[in-house]
Amino acid sequence: MSSEFQDKVVLVTGAGSGIGRAAAQAFAAQGALVYAGDLNAEGLEETQGLITAAGGQVQIARIDVSDEADIAGLAARIDREIGRLDAAFNNAGITGPTHLIEDYPLEAFDRVIAINLRSVFLGMKHQIPLMKRAGSGAIVNTASVAAITGPGAMSAYAASKHGVLGLTRVAAMENAAHGVRVNALAPGWTETPMVVANSAQNPAFAELAKKAIPAKRGGQPAELADAAVWLAGPHASYVFGQLIVVDGGMTIGGFEP
Image (tube, rainbow, N blue to C red; front, side, top):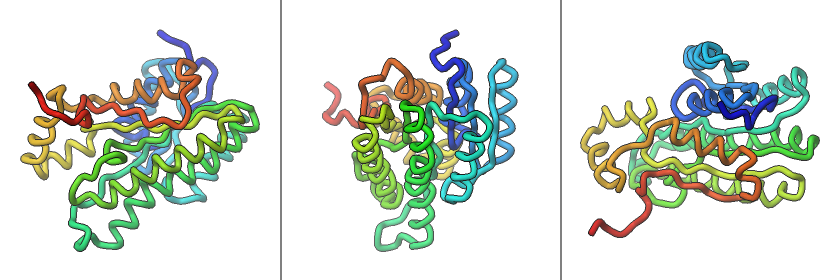
């Protein structure tokens, strides 16, 4: 078992399922003490059980990632209990409903932006001071292939993920000289509970999407988690402000021979 995060403290949001859960497990397997945050208390407890059963260390926190009091409170808790934060994976997010722009409900648009984009801003706002104080750290923010494409009927989602990339680049520029690296992960179609549920509602779209992926399959949460762990770890020590796309080739463009 690798121990690249031995005695490190890592915060993962959206840890109650999907990529967040897989990342929390991966960080813990490499020796980290993981603080797992999510709004889904049941999912968090399941994640905690999986990590504990595997011999890992984990603390859980039920948080609303769009609420600054919750984010600030978790950062303060980590500071109080451990005194430092070595890495953070700001991963929580939702897809939101699908509507043409002219039909998109404002309330739904604002909710997607709050959970997907404001959460990343708030996370970094309260994570960076802990890392700068120590003179080192790494942050990975979950964007999406929608950060570089324009998926129809998903204006709020695409806007939020484009925004995550912008925030990532600004934070990387501001903090590189302080020893804090900030990068973004862009998952493609990944078989998370959220995507599986959406696929069940629109199986024709799901089938079309998979056919458009050169790998001819969706990604597994662990495959995305591995990329996030790499970005947060020592082997990515010279990677700053980048968007790492893990999508089975979905965004290659072109066509098969």
